[in-house]
Amino acid sequence: MTPERRKIVAASVATGTALALTAAKTVVAVTTGSLAVMAAAVDSLMDVACSGLNAYFLRIAADPPDAEHAYGHGKAEALSGLIQAVIIAMGGLWLVGRGIWRLVRPGPITSPEMGVAVAAGALVVSLALVAYLRHEARATRSLALRADAFHYVTDIATNVVAGLALLLYRVLGWRWLDPVASIAIAVYIVVSAAGILRDAGEELLDRGLPREAEDEVKALLTGFAPEVRGYRAFRSRRAGGTTFLEFRLLVDRSASFERSHEITEGAIRRIRERHGPHTEVMIDTDPV
Image (cartoon, rainbow, N blue to C red; front, side, top):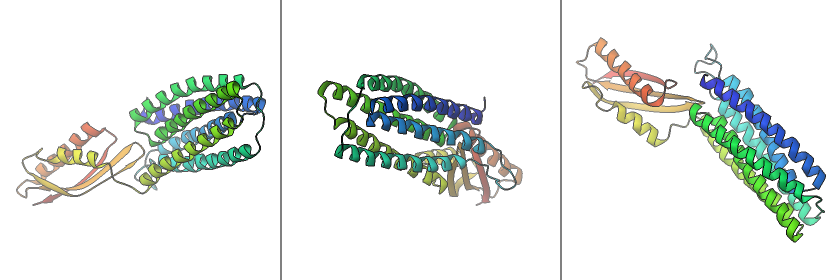
């Protein structure tokens, strides 16, 4: 299965799982009147929206380069992350408002045991889904799947907080625990949205690779052929699962045209062997 196909399958699995979790939590939230469970349901609803966006944008990102998009469509993943961050932040802010309102005007909770049960079940499902999405994100180098996995990390947190709040409510009878738990969940959601927004913005603005990754590429170029005298104008960026590297390779002017071509191809081969076949390398050779 190609990396692009793996991304689409993973996003589709996440969407279906989030739909099931949202339905279960919504039914329990309406039945019990728990705002913490409703917050968890809203979090899962945002997961549905975000995973659905991933499935859509990953199909776009998988399209090959064309006449109007010579560098491909990889940045569709970052665009997906940007939209997801806005959705997550809006949901989090809404929950903050609802939590404050419930603190001012507390309401009763019926059958808290039902809420604890659905939170525990959702926790198990979310743990398994996070492990799966993180594995696929690493395997395919997908920002969109990494963002999706982070959504379900927040889902784990919301399930734990909601379940504990209802359990303590059942034991102690403190009504304020439920809205406070929903506010804590909302704050966590907003903070996570800020992180996704930062990562997506950096990719859309063509931020270079981390310094360690660039240094590793530069080390591969040092001394791999006796005619190589160094490099300059080194640039890098990433779009989806594709890494782009550009630089000018300094070659001894005594090298023939054919030898310079061999050196260039050798440099590209070494970089792709280390960083994967989806690495796009553009090299200009300068005689020195």
